[in-house]
Length: 404
Image (cartoon, rainbow, N blue to C red; front, side):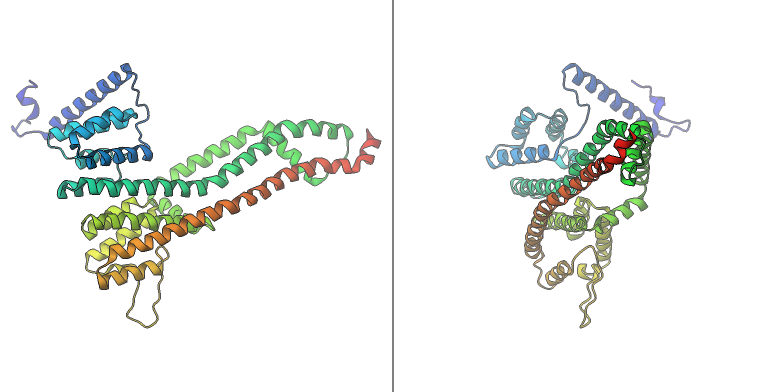
C-alpha cells in the first residue's frame, strides 16, 4: 500500500522513525476529522477539561451499577448516554471500546493525565489485578468526594479575602475616577492650599484617569514575570516553600498537604499496593511541590533500607530527640514509628487523618469568621480615608469662601 521500500534504508534495515511518523500523521488526521465531525454534530469540545465533580459522578455511578450486578460493559454503555460533558463522554466511549480490544481501563486512563490522577489510575490498576472493582470504586468514590469538599474549603479560605479586597479596590477606583474629579473642581476654583492627605487622593485620582495605561502595563509585566518565573523548578520550589511559611495561611497549606498524603497513602495500602509504589503515587496526589520533593526523598531513603521514621528525621536512639522536619509534624513521625514496631500503619494513619481533617476544617471555619470583621475594617479604612480627604478642605471653609 505504501511501497515496501518506504520503510527501509539503503541497507534494507527497517526504519522505525518513518513508520512512527506515518502513524503520527494518521493520528492527527483522525483527530482533525473527529473535531470536524464533532463540530457538525454541535458537540464542540473547545476546552478539553473535566471538572472533579464530573469525575466523581462518573465513579459514583459506575460503583452503583457494579454493586447492582451490572457488568462493566453494560455499565459503561449506560454512562456514555448519561454523561453530559462531551469530552468526558469521549473518554468513557474510548474506555468501553478498548475493553473489547483487551486494553485495560487503567491503560486508557493513563492517556488522560489531566482528567485521571495517579491515585485513581493506581486503584483501578489494583482492581484489574484483584478483581474487586466494587470495593475499590466505593473507596475511590468516598475519597474523591472528600477531596473535592476539602479542596473547595481550602480554596475558599484562600480566595475569600482576595474577593472581598478586590471588590473594595474596585469601589475605591470607582470613587477615584468618577467622584473625586467632580469635587476637586471646586477646590481648583478656590485657589487654596489643600491638606497633604487631600493632595495625595487627588494625585491618585489624576493618575488613574490620565496615566491608567501605566498601571495596566505594570500589572501585565508582573503577571508575565510571574508566569515566566513559574516555569523554572527553582522558583516553583521557592514559592512552594513560601506558601508553607505564610502567616495564618501557611498552616492551611501544610495541614491540607499532609491530609491529602495520608488519605491517598492509607487507601493504597488498604488496597494492597506495595509500600514504595504507594508512597510514590501518594506523592503525586499532594499539590505542593515542596511536599512532593520531600516524599520522594523519603521514598528513596526507604528504598535503601532506611525506616520511614528515620527518613522523616525522627531519631529515638537518644534520650532527648531533636526533630527538625518542618513539613511533617513530630506527632505524625511518632505514629509512623509506632507502626514500624506494631505493623498497624493503616489504622494509626486513619485515626490521625480524621484528627487532622477535623482540625483543618475547624481552622478554616474560624478563619472565615475572623476574616469578615478584618475585611470590614479595611473597607472602612480605605473609604474613610477618601471621605476625610474630601472633607478636610471644608474645615477651612472661611478661608476658602474669602478667596472665592
